[in-house]
Image (cartoon, rainbow, N blue to C red):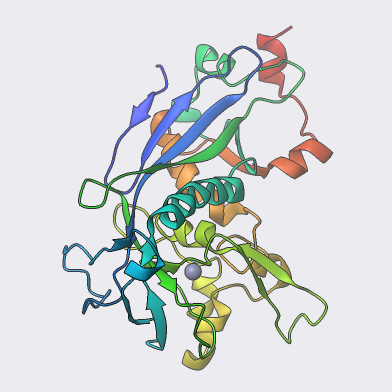
Length: 304
Ligand SMILES: [Zn+2]
């Protein structure tokens, strides 16, 4: 059987490309994102969205901006203003760049022979080898396709512009439905549990991660959601971002690193592109480069 080339679904689309011309095989998640330049002057509650279009406004210049209060995830009010045309265009370009930089070049999926009932055919296996001296793998990537608000999208994200001319009370806490003009920059976190560690994260990349959901869930979870559920209620919000330094450093924690958890959206798609229920294992690109796994007997037989 041949790999499926493209799968389009309501959570995200995906495209598989076989290895060719010295390029590895590639699985790209294509997420259609509608970024909504939020009008801070219009009354609007982000949750629930009720399928309604959030209010938008783009000003021609600073004199034309509207001002108002926008609340963050905690319900705390922040003074905001509307976007100016050139700022908005720059933000959209940088959003795509930073989300893709955050996720790409980390996740590799290596074929295994775990699924003996639905083994890759020799012809399929060959499509995963771009160079016989390297073990077969599929490189995973995300491609952000910015689409117009009001059209068909996988993700609708409001973007508030904080009024930086006004002193704000604390830090705006974003979530998957609402980010700010600061979300394409690196955020840093410090925690008493790890006094010597600074966790760094591209906020927009983390929030896009929440949109890489399964068809039956509203969002892709934080890395330690299952552990957090075993903790006292007051500790859960903090614990879901990771209770060990390694977990905390993950993209769906407070960091930038893709782990087994972050590979799930690609893994669940790859088994469908390949008509298998098992048969893939995650490896980080950095680990692959420093300690390359052995070339399998099957690959050696196919490429003598
Ligand atoms: Zn989150």
